[in-house]
Structures are given as structure tokens and as C-alpha cells.
Amino acid sequence: MAFLAPGDRAGPGSVDGHTGLGLDGLGSTEPVVTKALGGGQTVLSVEDLVVRYGTAVALESVSLNVERGEMVALIGANGAGKTTLLNALSGMLVPSAGRISCSGKLAHVPEGRELFAELSVDDNLRLGAWKATSRDTSPIYALFPKLDKLAKRRAGGLSGGEQQMVAIGRALMARPDLLAIDELSQGLAPNIVQELSRHLIRLNLETGLSVLLVEQNARLALGLCRRAYVLDTGHVVREGLSSQLLDDASVQQAYLGGPLVS
Amino acid sequence: MSAFLQYLVTGVARGFLFALLATGFVVIHRVTKVVNFAQGAFAVLGGFIAYSLLRAGIPHGVSEVIAVLAAAAIGLLFGAVTILGNMSPIASLITTIGLAILSEAVAMIAWGTTPLTFSGIGGADIHVAGVYLPKQYLLLIGVSMVVLIVLWLVLDRTYIGKGMTACASNPYAAKLSGINVKRIGLLAFAIGGALGGLGGVLIMPLFPLTYDGDVSLAILGFAAAIVGGLPRPRARWWACLRDRRADGGGLLVAS
Image (cartoon, rainbow over all chains, first blue to last red; front, side, top):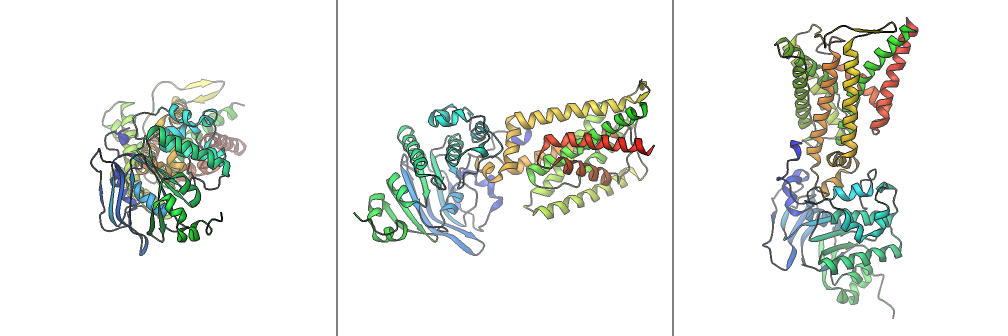
């Protein structure tokens, strides 16, 4: 097992994983990725991040930050660069320029769940802890009691909502300080989305976990999070408190299907 | 009847050889998506290394183990060449053919062109019900069975085995979970090399190998892997045995 000697591992999906995952590098300029000094209130800070796919610019000078214990939404249409941003944060692709500093561990729940379909629920969860010190899955089953009964089932055979729970649980097994979720509600019935949202809020309140929620359903995201960023074709076009963005005429027009009729 | 049993034993023994090669194929393919046509080279090089070690006076057992470890190292090297460069699947396939040709050239220069063999474990052969059973056949069957069962347990039950399955199932998610997918791919190549090498050292006392013997071994191992289904390792072993039994049956008819 010399291939898996401990000690040279970066955190799961964390920004310091760049060195290990740099093979997919798209940029030419080495981005500055640092771990911020501990004790600060900001868990994630992104400054002037640029990501290019060949000559196409996916993210152009994006800056955002997430405070410790905060839930922040990132909304935008298809192709706005939301998933690209998360992939850059988790080290799946190397930015061309800019700076990402994360004062803790970041775990990324990918779009479309991306479970290990032929493995059991329990195996999926345990694999989330590849670089963590503990593979104890009981906290996850405590959070999602539904999964406890499904522990031995093939992950690929579960319903969409259950799969999303496994995906979130797998990310939580890495014991992150910040959970970045890509499309929480994708393909799920409204009542399932509500159930997942409740779990997320509980997690945030009880453990102080910070959440960066990427969503196409802007109303859901703005309802869940205190603050939000609006991403459009690689730029942050609006940012502020969710309550303000809900009242913003251009946000209503573009993402909420017109002004609310009261 | 005794002729049938004779062919059955021979067929089963050869079936296990191809099961070893096919399992190497499948482990590498599942984890890395590379179709490794250098699989036969692991057997030839492993067998030849064991031959040289035995001739140098190193005892049985030790020689074979060193040869298998050397084959694993060769597998690791081939894996490094094939998967560390982000090649397309077809480019990596061609690369493995190139590596097979290269290893043939190396084997020819180092060991010559005559078929090589060495004596297997000694002692009298066993005769049961008119069936002639060289001990090497029993060794081939026994060792292969144990190795394949242990490998299956490791892949199916251990954390590292699940990590390998995760890489095969969803490399993107495996990477997100912090698994070093390339490193697991190298591990798969080392396992493939070891399995090929094991096949080589077990078969050489029964069938002398030449430097270019890897081609037929790779093709038969590949066929067994395809019949068994590349993605389904458990079904495959049975397919290997079934095929070789059929082969034995065919020989019986021919005789």
C-alpha cells in the first residue's frame, strides 16, 4: 500500500488539493492559493478569480466571500459559471488568475449528485472520508435517519432525494468547514427540496457549518440564505442581502420570473 | 473416460492461467479505462525473470515471488507511461501495444529466441483413475484459485478496494472525495502486472515460452475477459473455466 502512504494528502476537495490535482490545469499563470490565517471570521475569500477554457472565459474577475457560519447563495442562469466556480474552489480545475483563500476544509457536493452508483450507501459515505481521520458514519445517519435504513442498498437504485442526501452526507464525511452545494433542488419534487432545506438549515444552526449554495431556483436560494451573489456570464452582477435582491427589479426580471404580484 | 478427465484437468489448468491474465486486464480496464495489450508481456517477462533466477541458483519459491514482484514493478512502469500523460483511450491502447513490442525486443535481446522452460515443483506425478496429473497443474490451479479469491475479497471488502471501485465508477466524484485517481490507476497496473507475472511463472514449466509468446497470451486473456464481460469481474472467472473446458472437450472430440 505504498501508494497510499498518509501524510501527503491534501484535504478532500479542498483548495490545498491543487497540487495533487493540477493535471487538469487549464490556465497558464499559477494562481495564488493560500490558507488564510486561522481565527478570522471569513471562511472563504475569492478575489478576482479568472477561469478560461481554452480561449473562452468562463469566469472573469469574480470576487466573493463567505463568513464563518453563514449561508450564502450563488444564483445565475445556465452557463453563468456557477459550476466552474465550485470546481475551481474544490481544486478540480486550476484558475488562470486570482486568489482563493480558505481558512478551513471545503467539501463540494457536485451537480447531479455523482454517486458511486454500484456501491452501497454506507460505502459511498465512508469513501467521503478518504482523507479524514474518522470513517464513522453515525453522525450522517443521525442527520438523515432515512439513510440508516438504506445503508446496504446500492446508491444507484435510490430516489433522487435519497441520492442527494447521500451526496451531502458523503461530503460531510470529510468534516468540512464549508459545504459548497451545486444545484440542491435539481430534479427533485418541492416537498423533497423542503425536507433537504430543513436539514441544511439545522446543520448550519447546530454545527455552524458554512454553506455556499449554488442554485438555479433563485427563490429557493434567496429564501434559504441570508446573502447572495448573482453570477451572469462569468461576472458577479449583483450582491447583497437576499431580502434586497428579492426586491431588486432586474433580479426579479431575470431570475424570479418578473415582479411578485402581491 | 480417463481421456476426458485428462482433458478436463488440462483445460481447467489452462483456464486458470487465462483467468489470471483476464483478471489483470479487467482490473486495469475498470480503474483506468485502458485496454492493456501488454498484459501478455507481464507473463513472459515474469516467467523469464524466474527462469534466470532459478538458473542463478536461487531456490524455488523465492525466485517465483521475486519474478512476480518484478512483473508488478513492470506493470507500474507501464502504467506510469500509459496513464500519467492524460492520453485518449485509443492513444493509451496503442501505447500498450508499443510497450508490448518493446518488451518483446528486450526479452529477445536478454534471453534469445529459443523457447525457455524450467522444471516446476519436483516429485512424482500423481496418477488417479488413469489420469496423469503433473504436480505443476495442481499448483497452477491451487495458487490461481487462492490468489483470485483473495483479490476478489480485497476489491470487494476492503476500503482500498472500494476506493478502486469508486475510481472505476465515477472518477470525478472519486477525485472530489480526495482519492488520488492516478495513483489508484497505478496500483491497478501493478496488480495487473503481478497477475500476469504469476501466470507466467506458473505456466512456464508446463508450456515453454518464447520472447514473443505474449501476443497469444494477451489475445487469449483478452478473449476470456471479453467473454466474461470487462465490467463484471465475478462472472468472468467462470467464463474462463467454461471456455477452457469447452477447449478440452474440443480436443477430446478431435482425438
